[in-house]
Each structure stands twice: as C-alpha cells, then as structure tokens.
Image 1 (cartoon, helix red, strand yellow):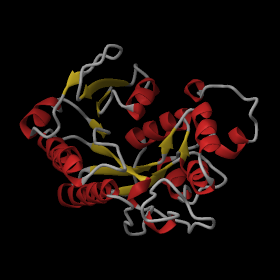
Image 2 (cartoon, helix red, strand yellow):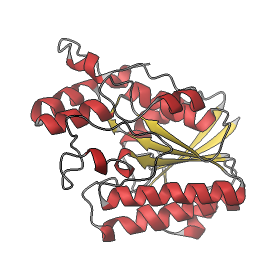
Image 3 (cartoon, helix red, strand yellow):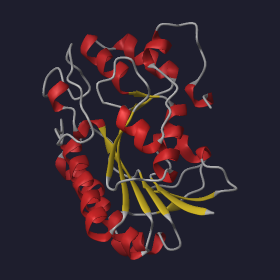
Length: 268
C-alpha cells in the first residue's frame, strides 16, 4: 500500500485525478486551502512549514498541485504559495523521508519563445519550435518564473538528498466541450495554443498515475504533460518513454467531430 498526499486536491487537476489510483494499492490523503462542500479534504496552509511537515507524516509520495494557478498573477500574489509554499513542500518531504515528489510545473515555464506576443501567454505562433524537456526554462510570465524555480528546487532536492522528483509541465486541462468552446471563442493564435496544450481528463489521470508510480531510471525527471495532440510542440516522446505514459486523446480528433458530445471526465 502506497500512501499518497495530494495538495491542491480541490483544484481542477486534483479533482480529476482522485479516482485515478486503485484503492487496494493506494491510500490518498487530500489537502486543500479552503473547505469545500463536495470534497472531504484537510485544510493545509502550505506557506506554514511546520504545518506542512506535520501533514506529510506517514506519507510515501507527494503530488504537489497547490499554487496560485493564474498566468496573469502579479509577483506578490505568487511568491507566497508558488515560492515559499513550494520550498516547504520539498522540505516537508525530506523531513518525513518521502520517496517521491511530483511537482506540478507548467507549460508556461518554457512557453515564451512560441507565444504570439510576449504579453499573451496563452497564444502560439504559426510555426512553433519543438520544445524538449531537457531544454532550459523560457518562462512567459511571473507564473512561469515560479515554475522554473520549482523545477530548480526539485533538481536540488533530487541531487542533494536523493529524493525522487518528477517535474511535470502540465498543459491545459479541459473537457472535450470546453476545448471546443475555447477554440470557437479564440483567435487563431489562441486556438493554436489550445490545440497544442490540451490535456484531456482521461489523459490527466493516466499522466499523474504514471508520474506517481512509474519506476524512474533517472531523477530529477522533467516531463511534458499533454494529450497526444497532432499540433503539439511540447515533445511527448520523453514522457512516454520515462513514465510509460500512454495518452489516448488528440485535440484534432475532438475538434474535427463536433457531433462527439462525450464529456472528457468519462474517459477511462
């Protein structure tokens, strides 16, 4: 039995992956910043290091999703949860002898070179350059800067303390209908971004399960987390190989078939 702690469990990614782990092999402990009516979680202030250390007692793996998720947030809104809170996550993992931390990084850590303009992080040029996981950070926002910081912290704790670390550059989690709506409402640059960065709920579950449970041949591991989109420019080959991640969805297939009304949350 593997004990897995999930911070930010009440967020979009957290809610999707809760059912991804078989209960006979994994026991989940869910943490959130606020109480919710529909999800039973333990309140955790990630900027409080002592509280974070206490919270991870008895855990084996931490999936750290908690953060300010806004690409438009100002630095003062980000540095508490995304810098101090992230540092506390790794320190709490070491204090409790955890085996692995899966850090929710972002495509925004490497997206500047492919944005249509520097002020539009969720946009993509007509012929984007392929980005591979081993290339240096290229953040498109202050939010992206915090994710580069988080990846660097993961590298430090992996190399200094021997912690298994997966820095997961997550794309844009949307249901099929949400993807269609975004592409209908956006201009060409915005639509290209959505087509490239889409992460279906089903693939999100497959991705996070693999990141938390796959045997790692190297650590830290940087991996891109999107669906198998035909128009992607984040390379997926490394993620598929290192984590045995097998994405099953493609934005182009969804957008080419407007009659497909399946909600991505139902994807296996």
